[in-house]
Every structure is written in structure tokens, then in C-alpha cells.
Length: 318
Image 1 (tube, rainbow, N blue to C red):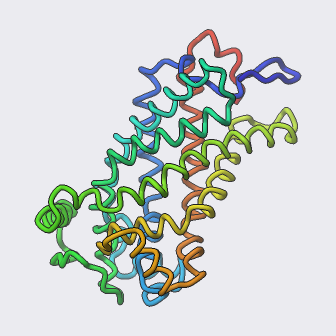
Image 2 (image 1 turned 180 degrees about the horizontal axis):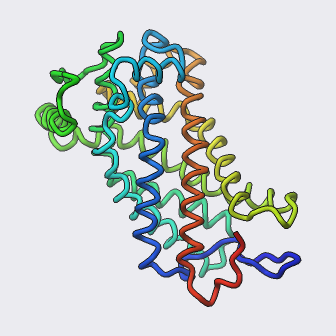
């Protein structure tokens, strides 16, 4: 899509066929790893808040962060990071699917929001299929530390020792899941993950382009286009997080507490929390989502600008 201003036309959206993929893929993986490394403590805090019974361990996001840090230091805030970082690989498939589906739909005349909605859902379907087994292991690793400060979340009965290496903990978790449930155990909560993340991804990309379009109508021409995109990404993250929060809690509980089905997880969550289930861990998710969305868009749109083919460079607005 091309827009114009006083200084001439500029590309509002850099499409897939406008980029040099040899630059895009390695830079995209580096950006994804950097963002996940910086924001992973928020994921740990969010997960532990979601699986606790009411507020029996933590009173909120800040309290959780302080208690985890006091009990285990920085390693406690990065528990499960290395196995979770496999998401970088799934991220390549995710973004390739997203851009590829957008490109195909564009050839059939679909508008920006339809392309983003459908492509975002397809990308998440591919990404979740790859990442769920690693996510299951990672989430078990994240909550093991809760036993050090009042909780008792260790459904696999892993012998937890703070001195154990991350590799040993990961190996023990994977071995116990395989022993108890076979390969299917690594896809526990897969349906819930799809129900939580496919619409989340679809709506996030659709809201991202919606907010970007609306913001560009009201901001002065001198405002950075990249900044507008980052703000639009954060707004999209806020919106989808509020809508999908209960499903994300159910997904986390299915994977960690080894419940039998989504209906069981919903009933148990309702029995414990009632209407508070819609807000459980929401603050941490909102902060995580806003920071993650802003950072991802900053990296993603910057890399697209750096990777754009020479014939389009004169149409790039930073």
C-alpha cells in the first residue's frame, strides 16, 4: 500500500515480494531472539500467576517478580528460557506463512485487514504446531521454582534442586512427560493453544493494520511512520490480550496441571476464581503484550526497511 504526504509517496506496508530474503531471515531471527531474551521474565511471571490457586503465592505482577528474584535471583526469571528460545525457529515459519498468505490473498484482491486477519491465523496455526511441545516443557520448567516460595506446583514430581543445570531439568521434564503420556503428552493443551493463539494472532495483525490506518489519519506528517507502527502494534496487543485472556489461562493450566480437557479446566477455573478468571494474570499479560508488540514491530518493520529491494528504497519513510 502506498501513501502520500508533502514529501512524496511512501510505502505504508512493505510486502513480501519487495524484500531481499537473504537479509530478512537472519536479521529477523536475531531480532526475535533479542526481544525474547529481554522480555522473558514477564513470561515467567505471567505463567506463575496463571497457575497459582487464587493469590496463594503472589499478590500480583510486581510481588511475583520480587519473590522470584529473592528466592532464585535472575536465573529464576529465566527458568525455561533455552527450551522456549526454540520459538525463534518456529518464528521463521510463522513469519514466512504470514507474509506468504498475505501475498497470495493480495493476488486475489483482498484488502489489508482481510489479508492480515487470515494470514495471522494461518501463521499461528503453523507456529503453534511446531512450538507446543517445547512450550509444554518450558512451562513446566517455569513453575518448578514456585515451590521455593510457598507454592506446590510440580505435577510431574520432578526432583527440583536450584543447583541443577537447565539442561538436566529440561531432560527430566521431557523424560517424565514421555514416560507418563508418550508423545501425545508433548501436545497437551494443543487445542487450547490453537483456540487461544490462532484468533489472537489473527486479531492482532488485523488490529495492527486498523490502528495504523487510523493513527496515520490523525498524526502530523512529520511523525515517524515507524513509531506509529510500534504504537499500533501495542494497541493491537492490548486489545487481543483482553479478549483472549481466559483462553490463555486455560491453555497454561492444561499444559502444567495436566487436566483432562478444556471443559475441566474451565470448570476448575470458574470454581476457583468466578469472574476474576477474566482478569487473572491480566496485568502481567498486558504489560508483556504491550512491550512484546512494541518491540516485535520495531524489529520487524525496521528489518523490512533494511531488507527492501533497491527499487523501493526511495519510497521508504522512517
